[in-house]
Length: 127
Image 1 (spheres, helix red, strand yellow):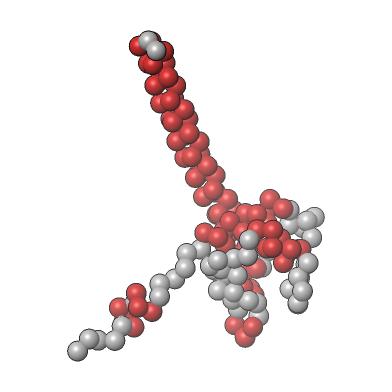
Image 2 (cartoon, rainbow, N blue to C red):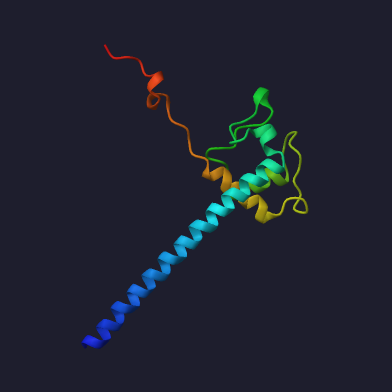
């Protein structure tokens, strides 16, 4: 292999890496936008009234906990489109698949809270 072809391969690899990094940055921005859109849809469609503002579940069994760690997307779609209990059915003409996916991304983005051992006030003092 000559120096020129080696240089071309190196330049191509660097260019591919830069394009990949740029696409990742754009994807991260899009994902953040989808999470915010999902949060807005979650609130505007009244999901929070039964499931809590961060999916923690409602008071007095109004709605089950759905975050953190929601169902996988396909199961979530079935849950929303054809609920088994008193939850209203969200038909695609009222809530599109893209909107439902954005809501799911919002629920996936909700971090798990700290465990009791991680909260200083809940630790037993050592003797």
